[in-house]
Image (cartoon, rainbow, N blue to C red; front, side, top):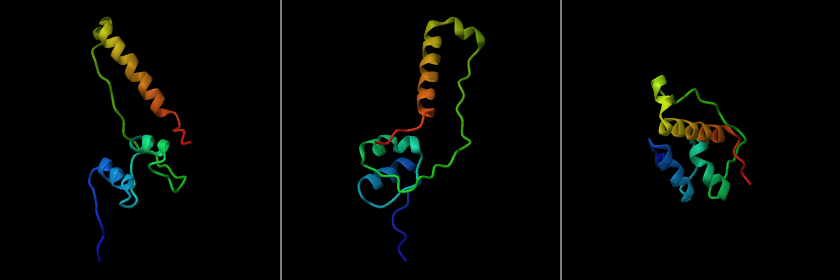
Length: 89
């Protein structure tokens, strides 16, 4: 029995789905643009949470540097936007 293609990289699996090669399970954030533009469809209204996190770690004195503050503020803004529900229209 041929199981078809399998990928150990979510991005490759999603790209194969975009190209009409089948269905894929993947991270919503990686598929968001393709879902918004209609290149992919979400057949079920199921999204599972994950326990993964990223941490920005720096010494307290680094907050005295304008470039560190600017990067931190930008990163927090991006993270806040990505936490908002994805509008698929």
